[in-house]
Length: 583
Image (cartoon, rainbow, N blue to C red; front, side):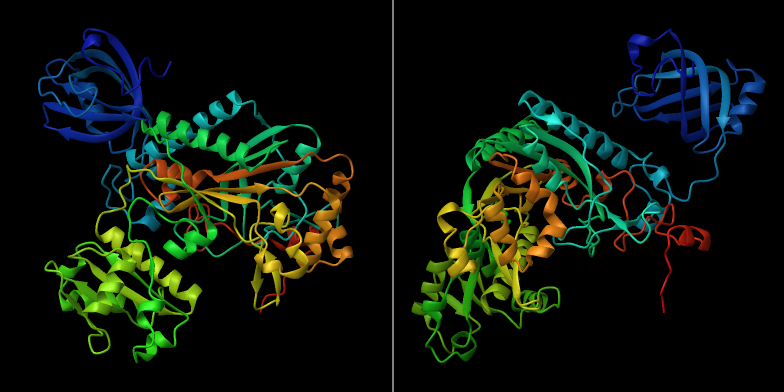
């Protein structure tokens, strides 16, 4: 056998034992008469010692040839370590080597394989298999496994069945672009990779599976950010004979279970907030409620004061930044420049200092007196010592801009603590949203989301006011899960397709299989999907997902390690009946 123990398990209780270890050479310290080697595997590090008084000349010479990342096997005796290291579990012992086998040599790594490395992100992604040897990455992949096991344990105990669904499916409009796969056996036709298993999990409900889940890969061909990948993983779930309350209860339970088992944290409160309130109070539909700075709408206390910028604005809205009254003029000017960046898009910012002595000083003192500014403070819940930051403009734009500013200030003030967890359900989303470019309604979630029963008549008279029977689970300002009660009858689904601009022929071509299934006794059903990558990252104290994925792609959707995507040769293109038209 290659090893009797791992490099992380030996301690003083093993002193005197003969053992066998295998792993990678982490570090070498050669004093000539004595050589120390740190041997590393997934489980930890054990120090090896070669001593010319106790080791043969041949063994010393062989040990002197070792280099970083060589793969070796050693046999020897566990002895007490003279200079103990209390920072590692094996720090009380070392192994006096009496036999050394070099299983493989290694080139000098392109970056230091250690907790703190000198390798930039691009370089580490190119050599990802080396990066995984580093504890910060390895530990995140182990953590991901732990989260996945807890998900499976909880859902299995709740009676859910894990069912796999196909990866080669039909292209259907679900919001983002599909990745398509040409079919060699069906000339000129294409599969699509699933953006989600949505229709399949609904068909499983028609099939009577009752409670389904799957930890599944999904694919979307969309522009990427640091927290997006073209392929990502969902915890996909569906239940039959349920209402919204049933689903919220089950998946509050899942979230509580994960927080307790993975993080050792107990969270009881899962407040609920309507989509309308979330937009009004926080400017987005996934608010971080770990801190305050709720929006205060100022239209009624700012207009009609001869300040044209506010008078012409659809919305005037502000937040109170704790302790911000101490900011210097230079610091405030930098903040104004920050909101004017293209990424935020504000034209400027008005501010008012609420001084510790109760007085006010603003950038618009010419137009507003202290009595006016006191009303601003009341609307924004500002306290003495706070800075009131005010933006104005078109409602949707200015809310998004102020939301970005709110998150930035919370980051600067250290209010977004990774070990503080604040879940929130956002409910009552609009069913449809108007798209100016296509001049038609689109489903805010997807075409199978059920409208609130009491709002169904509005589909004919005022579609924009119809609320969806939909819900998102937000954790620390990130949407970690979203779902809905589904339409389960053909008539309502047909009506929905009509409002989304599908002709009967288009609806039949795209979704005929689902409509047919609904004619064979489809039960009421609903579900939810969690973003597994993002959920894992947040539980792990971070918000970017890349390090929690074994082999991620960069922001251009490329795998720089294997150089994908790549070109096909002419023979493959011909076999697939494809011809490139690239200018």
